[in-house]
Length: 193
Length: 193
DNA sequence: ATGGCAACTAGACGCTGTAAAGATTTGTCG
DNA sequence: CGACAAATCTTTACAGCGTCTAGTTGCCAT
Image (cartoon, rainbow over all chains, first blue to last red; front, side, top):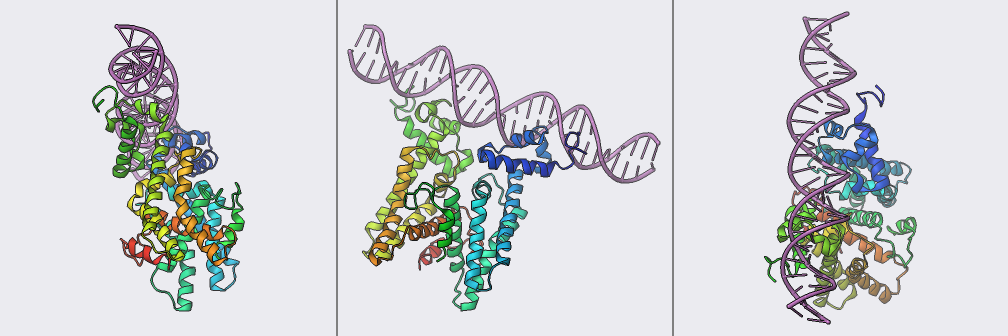
């Protein structure tokens, strides 16, 4: 059961790996079913047996992205202090750090119109990925007993997601004191002060 | 020089109108050069003479979008009080209101990878569209003489753009107290308190 | 009036996603 | 052990897409 035999053996994962490589190296427009099949060394129709159509493959890749995004936040929270405000900052920084480290994947997850948001596994992974920030804000609300509705959580999520989106889109270039290449890490540290 | 004659007369604007209609009614994936040509009643190759390629048409449409977005904010600022904090809120609300009223166009402007960000006219329109919020925050900074660098402006832009992006993506559904259809207008009013 | 030129059409090419049908391997049951 | 069913992959085909080239039409200035 090698890569050269008729039956690949692990084609589904091989196609996902190929898709991520193409996305990272050539961008979302080059990410096609046939390109993934070529890179994996199979016929152009093979991916359909594992993903159905292009939406299925992109949705599966986005699902993996949300899972990794969740892990990044959880890992950074493990090494964080117990202070609730500090933990909220750490969760937000984890959210943004994932976007800065994986800009193409982040864009695919949140911006590609071909992704199927009816997919149950995707929605579950998405909700898990936004949960660390949600929980951190809710913990603050409960502690100070100022927690009204969800507006605090939505404000925090908007701030974090907006910064991540603008940064991965390259739109913060020139927005920061005219520097063509803003120090995103420095801006990120100031974002929650 | 009517729509039925060999020479259309105003094909460029007709194609832009067709593109906006397709985008609004059928989404970004249906927005193709050939579909615009069909709707305008010309041959499939006609758009190339006015826009060069698909990126040219989408970039021109996005340019119009940024111009309208700038107008919405300016109009709302005309009827706004002189208080600097209030004016900053009005500018941000105008930014978001444009996104809520034109979700498909907003997505095209900020999310479509086919848009050419090297285009000078597009960059100029984009910078004009984000200027109302920028100026309002800078006026606050100057007034209170607390204005450090650009972090205040970037925080405000991130908050506004993040809310607009999440709302137009439909991701705020379910984020607000389990309601499937959150009252975005009510959330928007609370966003800057 | 007529020549030049801009606007538009027609056709072709390679790319894409997807569907149908055939080929090959795996695994299971008699 | 052998045969058959199911899963996996290939081959072929088709329509739609962007874009290029060549050809056609009609306006406009000379």
